[in-house]
Image (cartoon, rainbow, N blue to C red):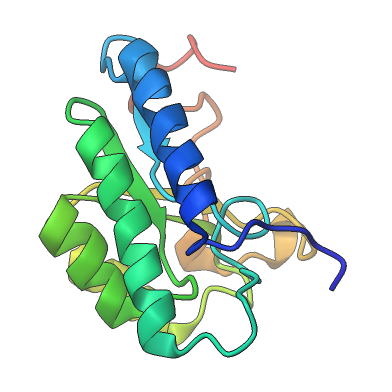
Length: 173
């Protein structure tokens, strides 16, 4: 494997993660300075891709370890929105149960409109729309702006950046 990652179920890792999260939350659990926290952080890019597990780990064991990490973040961050990458190793059903229903998470999905934004991901985004915070990154890599499907082009007819609801048109990058 080309990627290093701590074992998510390792007691030493979990202890150190909890200590770090408590210290980090003491400084940054403040919605005046932080919009959201990606409340998971495992795998490549912290997006739950290619998580490394000890040999012989059962799916049930993996699910419980991931649930524990979601709970650690939720216990430390009570004021800032927590999000989880939609479509990671947990799968949609457990993401909904463990992150959203049990801990109040919202969801984030990168690559909207790309070949990696599966039909299942799209269905989950539709299901969660209006129920919780959804954050998306438009697909810009590997396909080019001209190849993005029409229904994933929020910038169309919007030269002033008005799609970004945080800023008034003309005051954005």
